[in-house]
Image 1 (cartoon, rainbow, N blue to C red):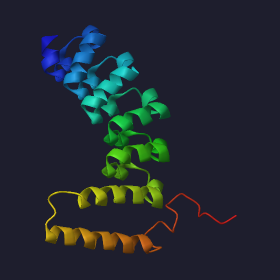
Image 2: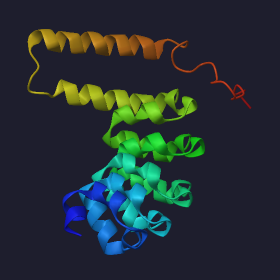
Image 3: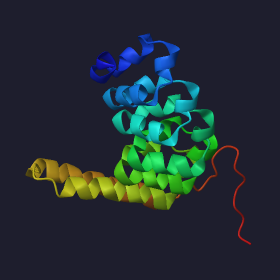
Image 4: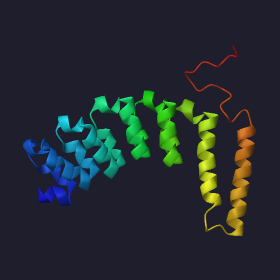
Length: 181
């Protein structure tokens, strides 16, 4: 038990019985969320266990049981906790606007794991850009040249956003164009 508490990776080397012991596995994933991969299948399907593992290591999400990875409400809960878990969700859930919006709320970079369609969603992309620009604008490290770079970047973003070619005027592959009713 002590080895698992100090190094969750040690769960890999214990017997199947200990890999199915909830106390041992909790200690392991609290130390290293990736230890979830060595837990018994029933514990990888346990919501609280998976939440604990992803809280420690967001990438541990990939070792959750498939049923949990396909559960929309659970995925929403996980990305609220760790936005980069979006990288490991199904294609269908990466195309779910609410899930993606929740992920980018805390980390705009999570947008790269969204579906192509949502990466062209004007409103969602603007939320991410404004979040980043606002955070940078209020930074205490802005010197005049950095501030000027920021303003140039903002102007460039504004030009790109106003250009119909850059804002998803064409539907992404596999999506039919929207025709006005």
